[in-house]
Image 1 (cartoon, helix red, strand yellow):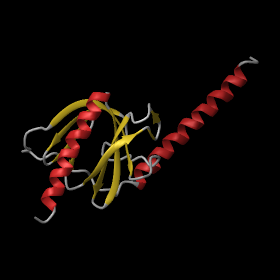
Image 2 (tube, one colour):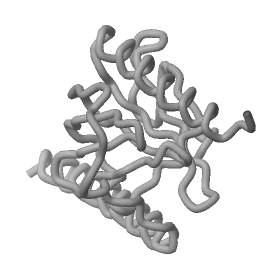
Image 3 (cartoon, rainbow, N blue to C red):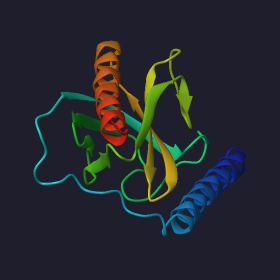
Image 4 (cartoon, rainbow, N blue to C red):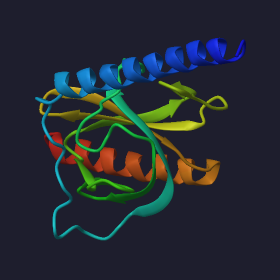
Length: 169
């Protein structure tokens, strides 16, 4: 009997913490309900420049690695397939609709060491910096070292082509 009371108190505290986490998540989803839905991949895309698989970590507001985007299938970590096309990047997240980042919306790529709740070796995450209807976003991907290098190279090719097409000749 003397163990029952402490166990009941611990269980109640754990249930309270879980309820508070659930309420916080629901509040975040409600506050982001007005964010635009990312585009779906177009039916016809040119040949794939690069394709690989890895782990989707998170999407956050641009420059704020703590402000997770929780709506439109971007809220949870998932296995993913990434395909780079001349028109943009397709993120196919397990359990969600595929997301298309048009090359006009892609602002840059780089490396990161952490995002929200994931910390890896220095430069172990690939960051896709993109824009969705004027809102800057950063999407974090965890790929092998070789795949990271290949993704960054393919994305640089797409960004360079977009810059050349957008500049006056």
